[in-house]
Length: 147
Image (cartoon, rainbow, N blue to C red; front, side):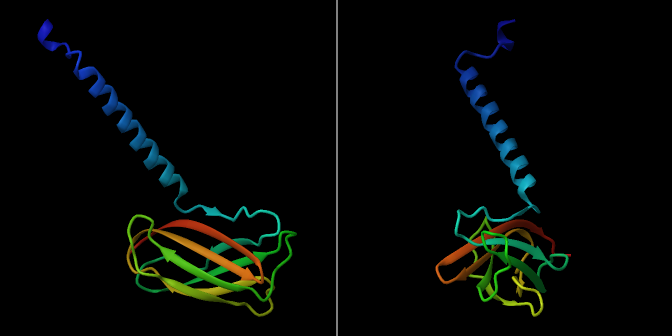
């Protein structure tokens, strides 16, 4: 049945299509694995270490409290740092959504701030800290609900 066999010119196209589908599936699986995971910064020696901790269930359209712990390379809590958060959507351009974090009294190295997710979807939370010439950053990808 010669009519049911694919032509020789269709085979490379079919192979390319299969490869494209596999790459897309791998990308989706990888991005879903990263959503909701916390990744403390892996800074080189001499840099600050940060760990982000949202303090409530993350939702859009309302103030959300965030906390970050800042430590020296030796693991000691760092006081007196300038700390800020940036909320961005990796999949689209958004205006700057930045807010400062303040030290928490009685908790060395802990800073808190409050920001808003302006819509539902996939967001990146980035915390940065600076003290003198020392800096550090941490990011976390999260999925934000509108409910």
